[in-house]
Length: 105
Image 1: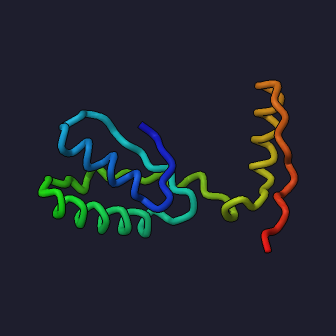
Image 2: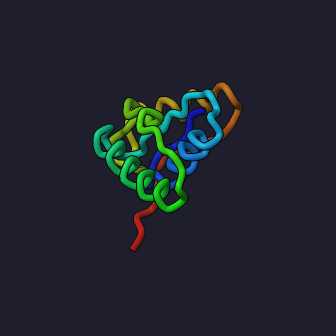
């Protein structure tokens, strides 16, 4: 299973659910912004606290984080992102705006 790993709350729920059900799969969190060590640490801390609160076992080896796709920053354009959007639009006959969203005030 692959999912976006941002705040880690979803990730912790998935991993603890896996630990309590003994479901045999790998759950990969694709980090949206943080490097592997920081993402792992934040996930572990929340998982340990939540597992303690729920009185369930937690297996730290179930935390798998992929950081190979982090770009220059959330919602910041990059050449790779533009190329991916163009490829998607071409292959899927979809329109994708390649312009950055307007700045928020």
